Image (cartoon, rainbow, N blue to C red; front, side, top):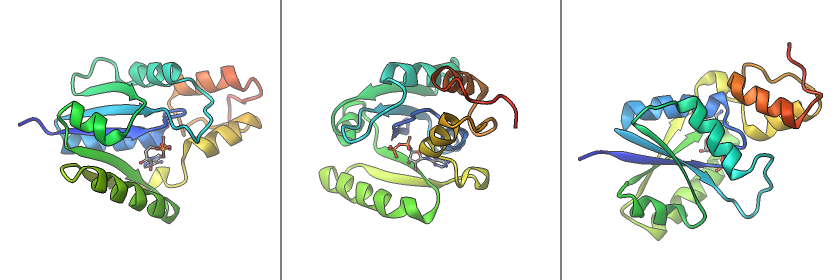
Length: 165
Ligand code: ADP
């Protein structure tokens, strides 16, 4: 049977850290669905449509990866598409408590679904979308932390963003 994992997140925008988790997730699962979330408590730089389109551009036509969005509970989405795993990435210790809470609540909501964590690649330990946006908004170059196509989109939002560095 095909092993499908759902990788949910904000991806605002997708970073090299996310891509590392996607590539490594593909070694563990037959198929990955990247689920772009509408998180009611967060404000986003990019719309859901923009985030999906950036991810799709990067994935190309890999038949093992899909991109989708969903407004409800992640476990409901996972159940709906016949998957059984939620994939998440772990960085610094500061991720742990929130991820632990999420994994426990999701298990309480649906005992048939397991959350699987992959440790970040060491190069991406301190990379997250928020810190990248913060640096970019003040003109700091973030090249190398996001794919070039995403860098260009950040430049459209933050004209001060420098090319070099
Ligand atoms: P969320 O708002 O759900 O945390 P994010 O887009 O920030 O969404 O992250 C989605 C998932 O990707 C989370 O599991 C997060 O821990 C993981 N992730 C984000 N950045 C990295 C990184 N640099 N290395 C490994 N995992 C990461």
